[in-house]
Length: 89
Length: 451
Image (cartoon, rainbow over all chains, first blue to last red; front, side, top):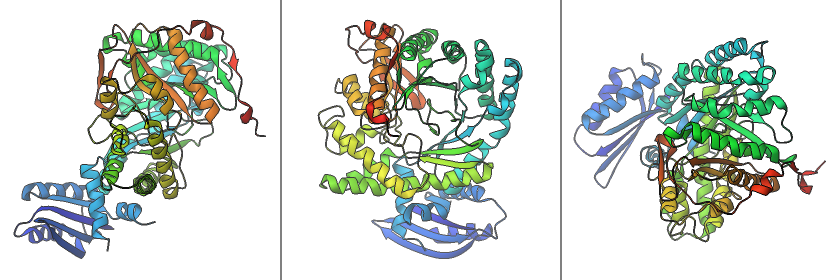
């Protein structure tokens, strides 16, 4: 199952390292990464495959949000279908 | 890979602009529950609702996390209870209490369907049923009630309109310790729809399947921000922007509805496209109208702005989903919308203007508090006016009005939560008593004869 991880917040060192280490630890495979800095704000979007993860998507989403709080970023993990539904005719 | 701006737009809509799924409502037919006695029927009703909706809250919470979009309310609607209670109408309260108990067991927010459809005529058992409403609403928490008193096809049942004025007054009186809160759970409809997921007017129509999932989307804040982003646009461009925004909101709703139906073993019913406000700032239909260029909602131009908004929302939504239903339009409840509350408080918005607004949007005079000494006949006359707008214009209209006991213009009632607070609005003092006491049926309009 594919999901989209978004990480938004003030830019600092080691954001990608922390998030990708967390995902690797959960068995989540990163398929694609896109990253930009907008006026000092860091915005990263990852497409990931959760097929190898032991946990349910809802549990992963909760833990991503917790990781975000611990590093001072806003992190969402969402089923990719929400973006397909809203942005593709 | 996704366009990163699309992804960030969705995140922004949810985090900052209050985009949410307002309700997942499971419609459940109670027809299999009819038994020989009120007690046995009540037991079957409780068991059926609890078994059909057993996983509703769990599934909704899981979907909310997986898609990262809040699902605010989990609700159930049932077959109009007057049909189930017909053989023992005097004991209808037992069914009402069983439904309320089921709602509490399930942990849902509201359960709708303590309802009767009397738009053409009112049988003795239906009148008896309706007379139980004030006491039942005063002694239950989650149960909501609605009565259909008119339709474009049948006309307006003015005997039922007269009765409902009295029922509204009595409901307020029996819940006077809570500012007449019972009336917030009671809607009087013309052209009620059978698949409405929104409360207090939801019921599960007899033409519906056994168990159905209907979803109500929301997002006034998203529309407001979209308009804010193009401050110099003309109205053609504004309408286009609203349409595109409504498309996205509806798609999110349809996704959740389909998946919820699949996981709950129910049919996917409809997506209701309504823009439903909450008392939170930035989640207001009134603020959209003000963003369009009105100093205060209620001033001249309000009806035109609202008509355009309502139509553009429908066009975007219909493009996004082939299963559109329910009420589908902009809601303008006074107490549940911060912009409406403030406009009413400063006198910019009155009942007469609200009545005009209801001619171009869903649904009607909603969550309006009026002085506690307003006569029942005046309330009936307000209901009749709204029903006439609905009947003639082939649309749903409704009245949810609270004659707040002991309160007068200048006071305020506060229900808290999503129901918000409402300043007491003045009503006309001149009597409508003779008109209402005539009773009978206002015949259906000529344009209803389409066969």
